[in-house]
Image 1 (tube, one colour):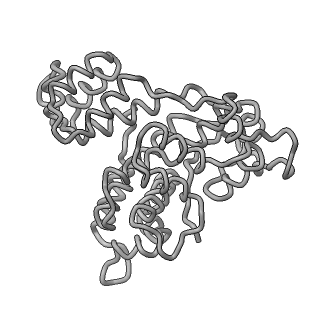
Image 2 (cartoon, one colour):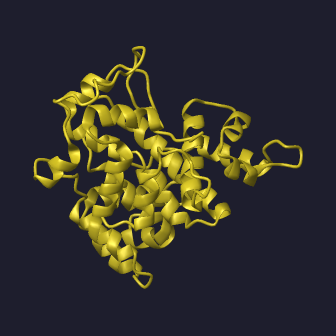
Length: 303
């Protein structure tokens, strides 16, 4: 069982099922060939965001350099100030200085915010997709992957990026071929993981894990992140890497949050290797899982 997941983004009211076009339909595009021929361009991230992401990869970067970069983007600066003044960071006083906000938030949280804002700004309104719900699910998956990675021995920041970006390939396909997306997805009940990937291949010529991995590679994220996203909808291998397990478990938790499941139901649906991390002596989920799941349910969009 793959436990793969794609956010519940399709619109209501649902039709019975999303039907794929016949295999080998001559009107089915070939996304990979269209990129090679220059007919399709992958989404771009704003230059300021790219510069900030590159700077934040430098372990010796100082807060003043980051603050100077943020000052070039008023919208991003406003989001950083809003985060610094939020209850999460105390919210005891009104902070107006970008330098002070960067110092308070810290480089790790700042990097996550910048990546999330940069990625989300690459997509406008897309047929068949309810973007606020999509990005909330992505943030839940990112947060869950980060927490699971710590226990699985995977890199927590790579896991966070995997969770955040694992379904962006679907956004790219729908943005590139809006007429097909509208016909195939709008109004139908949600499909996820391998089922969605199969429908995408029949209608778009490729699937969201493949496209997402290509995009992640082009914007400079580690190869391990791209490879994990590429494997997201595949059946789980017996020797799945810790990063693969973190993403699969996170996607399962994000699905449970989206469907308002109880903690016990969410825990029971996890891949066995992830489920075992939060098993109590009584064979049920432990208090640590209860706390994690409650926190995920309270996730608020940052983007």
